[in-house]
Length: 78
Image (cartoon, rainbow, N blue to C red):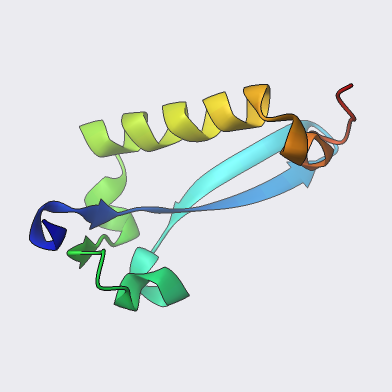
């Protein structure tokens, strides 16, 4: 049910020191108006909450395991 779904947005950057992600307001992203999204969360709603931990864990797992986006880490996976 859409009303039970919450959207979180992360901004990704590859810095000289390595990958970096930060929470941004989800309501500024195009997906926030999707009928699949019940509530697009603001950054302040996410920081320090359990959903932040989940969002970063999911993003980290994708970056680590999905060879299709290896270039986002500045490397290629074979």
